[in-house]
Image (cartoon, rainbow, N blue to C red):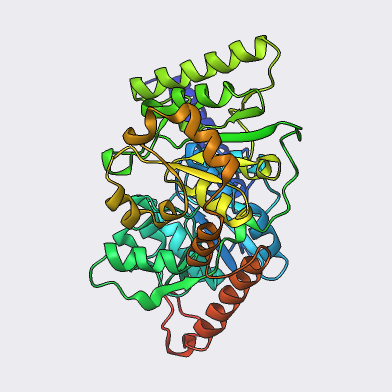
Length: 430
């Protein structure tokens, strides 16, 4: 190689090193920005140290944005908790991390690597971690022994999915009431029932801004669930009874029908569910074209609509129990797709406080539905069911119970930390 060639090669190498150094510094900056919640971070939280993320309570969410609704319903409660104990939302998927900003101003962080997660927990000495679902990534967070790990789930229902063997992994599992305790006793083997803590339904204590206009007509909501992840968790009535239910209701001129299906009904993978949903929407559209006031409501907070709903028809799901908590004085009708009333009473005790739509009653829905709602002969049974599901906690009391249990658990854990050997040497562990 000529002298000129060596000079060019040396200059190229030096420039390359300069560019590489600049890129490296930029990446590290972006990573740090991503760690603390600045959106322009590209390669998030890679080998970041000594950046404090102050909080007392971590709310862990490890799933994609399609499950963010499980966290969103907790946000009003968490924002109140933040006034007592500093809260940080922790995400493992960057898309969820970015989308949550539309719903809350709570501090949030994104943590990609397991090692970074463990370092974050240890370095910041968080006292308690809350889990709103059964994401598989929860078990990475559970690896750290210092904080109290509390599962709160994202609703209360009699679906099989409400009880998971994963409950054994948490320090405590917050449940709505005695019904949930019985559910765990019946479905889990060798489970320490003392882990269960009754806190009612704090998510329902919020004063919701009404999303449904009042009406002089009797407002009846049909709010079916989706088909679930598998047959065991399939409780939807859309494909079996949906069109017949709505047809019977719109036939009565004194009714205003609100069709509010689970969000996953609208793009269901089940052909029959999707077809029935489309037929229901078509029927409502035709009736509206004639000047009637029925509504298909694909989006919005269903809890914000209950105040102006006079009666509810729903499936085995959290919707019926939320309605029971908020509106125990109002009629409710339940559906059963399995045609086994004895098993339904065991699996969903609320069915003992509601008329049931099933194959046997299906043929007479035209008269039965309106008769059931007008006469409301099961009001006493509903009040007893509410006591069973929510332990006598009234609206507003659940939130205080939730806060008290959080505080008590942190105090208890703090009293035991003198026995704890930290992952990194600290004054606390020395």
